Image 1 (cartoon, rainbow, N blue to C red):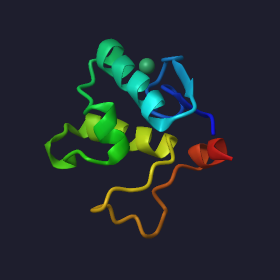
Image 2: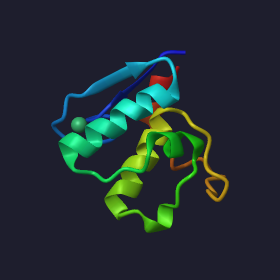
Image 3: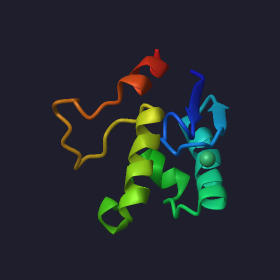
Image 4: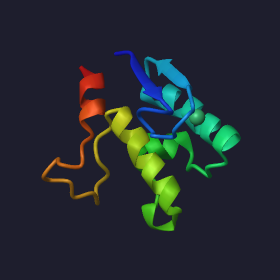
Length: 100
Ligand SMILES: [Zn+2]
């Protein structure tokens, strides 16, 4: 299933027109993470860790945590084990549309 992540809409980094498309979450995450590090100076965790949900949110800056969460949402990745979003109200309608 092809997926697409845009900096502006999905990650809400205003004014950036980056669009990354790919077939695998790992591939897309890899390129988005590289872009975020290089172009936006955001110290993202490794793409592999993001996809696996294998990173410690507590140690991340607030901005990094927010962008990481949005990236995972954009990739439609399942929530990490210690996430409790049972209500599902945290889901962005725009990214819901995008997944269909
Ligand atoms: Zn960007």
